[in-house]
Length: 457
Image (cartoon, rainbow, N blue to C red; front, side, top):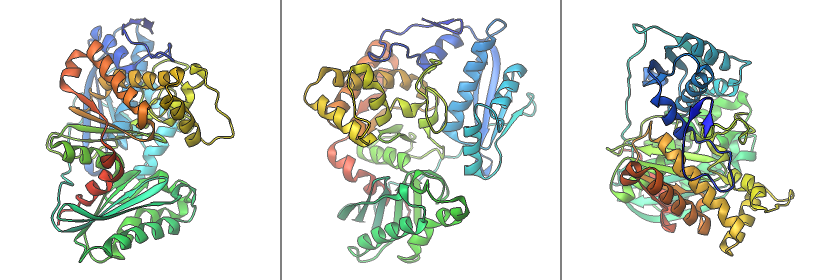
């Protein structure tokens, strides 16, 4: 195959998506002929900086150079998160990237998202060798604490789970349906959080600490951007930023630690497996990712790979929110299943909700319906080809595949196809990496139990 003058090969094309161009595979071929240094640094809160050094090709590859560099900047922004991007190298490429992230540029959504998180405009800076910053990373040691009486809370988009834990043993848990994504008044979410805390506290002789697993991007315990509060107007943002700290005060003056649900999933996996370098990837309404390193620490990164590039095909599926094409949420979520259904010859009624459409396809898969099974096989192939991309930024030894899309027969097929493609095309990665589905108990209560271990008591 060829794309922008770069020839590349891979054996396993996703069955229902013959136009798929895996970014990771193409990038490996692109770099074989690249010798012009190009450096990217992304700065986030507290002066923390992540640096990525790569290369571009020479004359005649202008389109490929921009495509590669622009996609790498986007991958780093949504992996690391940041309010300032330093670029060092090809000035034509840098000028185009700066224009893309301008208020009217094609990456205006990305710039706006980062502005909302860090409460300052995103800057794209061109700098020479002397001004290019050094890496300044700091991992965070959270979780893994089991002593004392703890509350673990898992704030999901459709249900909330809470556990009461004494010295690492769960003595009480409950799961309650709620609808935070439709409420404009943050008092609804606040009352639900407090009710969960109080239900668990009633089962404990005392409360020594509270840990929260929540969807969103956090600075400290503050949700800067979160789908749980998507309907809350901006003028009430301060209420959202303090919501977990205020809820904890209803229980008493106890430590509380809030972490992204993806990171808590990875932490739960690390605790369960007894090792680090674990990535958790949940395929649900969107793609949620978390990671813990060899020491069991979280990186303090975004890990919002739902908006990171996966597919370079120019007419790839387009995300309605970010307006970008070929990003993770269209390949590792219920949207992927629904998008692939027509290619599999499966008609889904427009009267069904997205969740109901997923269930319809899953019912067909459970009955052995071959076209429905092909949908999950296709997602498994997507995953294998994307892991070689994620591996460039994360040292992954264990991948846990979770979420509604990964339940039942479909989940088994996603994992088995991913493993097969890794064996056939990525032997070194296959030797290093295990891809697994957690058991049902882990899926249901592992998140809240791991959340309970977040604060140090």
